[in-house]
Every structure is written in structure tokens, then in C-alpha cells.
Length: 397
Ligand code: NAD
Ligand code: NA
Figure 1: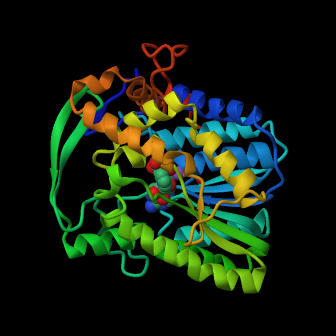
Figure 2 (figure 1 turned 135 degrees about the horizontal axis):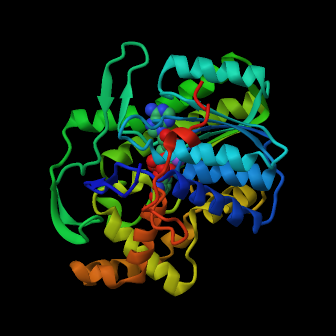
């Protein structure tokens, strides 16, 4: 198969296995340049096949010598489909991890189901026995009710007033107007159901019931606070309500985990980075392009891997934790600096048309979004036929 990027509405429908391997290898190379730290030894990651979950997995494995189990929902190649980027990232991770002393396993399944939880618990019992850390890094558009099977959808929409703005089309490099209707109450509820904390709590409860939590057990999930520029669609929108619920869940779990395990449940408010999920948020591409431009100019730009390394090394397992009044770990402090926010806003005003493509921040975003799907690497020949069957591993269980 000859694999080229195919996009629909800024979503990549194809992924290149060699490019995904390149992406994962680069994460490992970056981690190797960073200092090691003492951390958890047995980690379960929900959503570790891409984005923040994958970077968390790489830094924990490479820099803290942790063993990992990753639960993700990815598709293997089939007929004319290349398989998802996350699928190939998993393959590449396992390959890289062979040179580590730790053990790594992948489970492909819907994290929201009772069945996936049961399979994962069996896997923990047969391997690590218990876990020291659960990273809950899931981003999904839908969640089946685990008891009835009814599928509930999330919607990334503003609340109250419609959103009128601009969006960048990645494939055509055009600016399009967007008009997103304010969410209905059902859409707000649905988004909280999918992206709130309920499933995270179900995971922790199932693991605890099975005796899988070690003394000192920690769990972390990723939120976003963000700025004025993204506020209407993010924190004040449907997803903001879901994040409120996620953060409340952390506070509730934190108190009993502290009592029973001397452990904790925490939220980290993480910075805006290029992932499959973030690109899906209306207006995000313009925001991150301008943000990258500014943070590069000011010299405080961070990569996704460096961001998670800093989080675990200094703030989760180190003694340099920054927290706010809601006990959220603020590892987004550079993005939130007033100077960064002010300049980003100014650029967003200034670059409302195709001129945004002149920014090196936009170019960096475009490079990253291609890399996320295995495209745009100079040392890969994209005209070469790829024999997917030949590189297909026996990964699924
Ligand atoms: P992503 O799309 O890169 O990763 C999502 C992960 O969830 C993938 O591993 C995917 O396989 C997995 N997943 C999705 N549905 C699943 C299901 N039903 N069962 C099992 N696994 C499933 O997204 P991301 O941006 O890394 O997001 C992870 C978390 O980080 C989210 O909570 C997001 O809100 C948060 N966050 C992201 C940003 C950002 O800028 N990207 C900023 C702050 C916080
Ligand atoms: Na992730």
C-alpha cells in the first residue's frame, strides 16, 4: 500500500506505520536526553497510545524505569485502511521498550466497558500484581453506558451563546468561518457523561475492589484551564463542564485514597499541545499556532514529552509542585503567563486570514499534526509501497 495523508475536516483518516515509529522513536530519544527520576514502578495508562498518554508512558518507562500496561482504543489495518496512528504507536512503543529492563503490555479495548476493566485487572494480577500509578488520559467522542450499552455522545460546543469564529483547514490551508450553535442541555449532559470523571472513578473502584492498588497509589488525569482566547469553546463550554466534573471527582477520590492508601488523586492542568483530540476543538488550530509563535519567541516553548517529564519528575514525584486553590497541579504555568496570553491574543487578532500560515508557529503546528499521523518526515519515502501485513504484529489480545 502507498500511504499518503488523507484528511476530512482536519481529521487524518490514514496513518503511516514507519512515520509513527519515527514519532515514537523521537519521543524516546528526547526522553534519553532528560534526567531520570524516582517514580512509580508499575503503571496503568488509560489512553496511552497517543498524545499526552503516550508521552506519559514514554517518560515513565524511559526516565523512571516503570513497567506499563496501556489500554487504548485503536484499529489495526484492514483492507484499504492503514490502521490508526495510535495502533502503530503502540507497535513502535513495544519495539523500543524491548531495550528496557521493564515490562510493557497493550490492551486494545473500549475503556468504558466492564469487560475491558475485567481484562485489564486480570492482566495486572498475572503481571505486576498491583499498580502504583493510574494515568487516565482518555479523550473520546462517545461513551457507551457500561450497563445498558446505550451510546452517549459528547459535543464540543459553547454554552449560552453561539460561537462565531474562524478555523484553519489543514488540508487546503484555507481559513473558514465557523458558526457553532450553543449546546442544548442534553449536549452538556452528554459531554459530562463522556469526558467527566465517572469512568475514571469506576476504574479506581474496580482496581481497588480487586486489590490492585499498592500502598502510596496515585492516580492522575489531565485537564485544561486555558485562557480568554479559548474560554468560550473550552472552559465555559460543554468540555469545561466535563472538566469541572473530572476535577471534582479527583477531590472526592483524593480524600479516601489518602486515608486508605496514603495515596492521592490529582489533576494536572496541562498546556495546549498538538494531538488528535485537541485539533478537534473549534478554533484550536489558530490558537495553538499563535501560542507556539509566542512561546518560541519568548523562549519558553515546551514539547509534549518535555511537558510530561516535568510534570512527573518535579510535580508528581518531586518536591516542586505548583498547585492552585482547587488542588490542580499547574504545569501549564508557562502558557498561562500574562505576557504569553497577551501576545497570543494580539496575534489571533492580527492573523485572522491566510497570513497565519506565514507564522513559524503555524508551520510548527502543521509539522506536528503530520508527525502525529506518521507523515512529513524527510527521511521516509512516502512513494514506497508499505507491506502492512508484513509488519503487523501479534499485539491484540
Ligand atoms: P489523544 O486523542 O491523543 O489521546 C486519546 C487517547 O484515548 C488515545 O490513546 C485513545 O486510544 C484513547 N481512547 C479514546 N477512546 C477510548 C476508549 N473508548 N477506550 C480506550 N481508549 C480510548 O488525546 P490527548 O490530547 O492526549 O488527550 C488526553 C487527555 O489530555 C484528555 O483528557 C484531554 O482533555 C487532556 N488534555 C489535552 C490537552 C491538549 O492540548 N491536547 C491539554 C490539556 C489536557
Ligand atoms: Na493520550
